[in-house]
Length: 240
Length: 240
DNA sequence: CGGATCTTTGAGCGGGGTCAAATTAGGTGG
DNA sequence: CCACCTAATTTGACCCCGCTCAAAGATCCG
Image 1: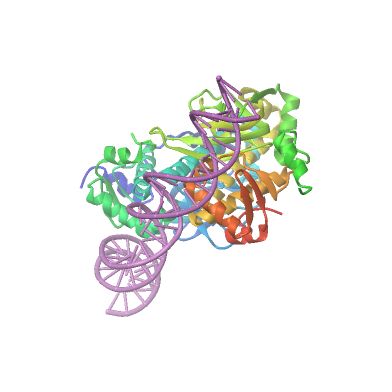
Image 2: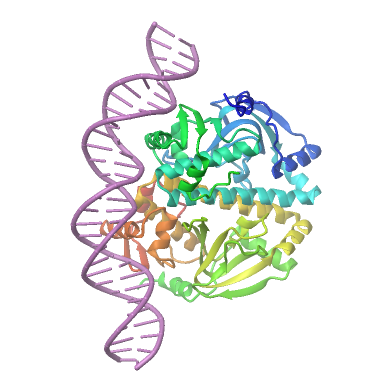
């Protein structure tokens, strides 16, 4: 058992991440000083919000893990992203009266609700906040576009490798181990996100394990050879 | 020759579109009153901006047609969208010092440059503008996510149908014919956008023609049976 | 302990990719 | 205006990656 297991335990226990210090954190610090932020606990399996529900607040993920799903009228479904501590949910509904996607909790979460009218109010009083909100939205656009690139140009196994590297890099930024972590989502969710089928994801993971790039046991993943993983992806992922 | 050909001629001639009145137009009207907007003509084949170039301005497309391309370090390329009159380019670079993608002009364009420092300035003076900019960014996120859904859940031919319907609906909003238009991009660009190969797009178009849903001759497209097209896509497209 | 869900793995197939060639446009200079 | 060249598009033939269908563990829940 390596030392990197300690943060993993913290991760599992939903504790506050150790060393998080990303730009958005400052937004939240600001916002907290200027508005009532209600804290809401949502258990795994529950919806944070659903397509069609009125849009009243932005949701800051303080703890836990979620996915966002885009839906079509005829019942098709697409996972568009996974969210964890430090991420802001609901921004895609800004300018609308209702949410346009589902946010599903995959691991018990604590969500800080930022009522949108109060956010608008704060934007007027704190000029810097405008810049930061716009930057956060732009960041969201860039993230989505990088995944379009991955899905549009990489074969299945490399998409899975890119997914693992991205997850690792995000966990690392939160102070967790990048080499050893627990997947909070099922194969089907990963598959949907990567525009694959769950059997294909499973096979890709098995093959990456056979190559000794990773080891997988159900939802426990170890990245054994990050350079090789990065090489097979063309290094669009920011890890170390 | 049908009556819808008149707006097509206007479209071809790069004239100002007839009946445009979308939300963003108001932004621009506002902005023009509050800052110097420099008009820039860019010819087909030129870059409006390139990955890595300093980010200095937002670009409002007044006329012409462009594509945006996401790039990877190892040379892969993905078309992430097509832009026309009323669209705002460069928003994805907000919060950064440099652009993170290419914007390529496909049909001679007139671009209104909104220097970013002046935009920031205007944001402080015109509270409504904040809301509108955030809304425009959120709209961009939603658009991207709908395409993720299309690419993740529809087979090739239906992606192409969805693409044609989307293009038609955008042209219709600008006052052009939704049933008869000229593609401004090559098969390879459509293919990249839809995560396909150009031969597949070509075959899909040919097959849709055989079904008599459309007629295609090189870049001239007629939508003959929009209901059937919508049906085969599951109607995620807003056309009429 | 038993049932539901998730994951893995196999076997076989097919949609879309690859490779190649033919056709057509479009551009350029003679 | 035409000959030539380059680039875009279409179409065919073939093949392979990833999907489908199926079954067998594994895990978690009550």
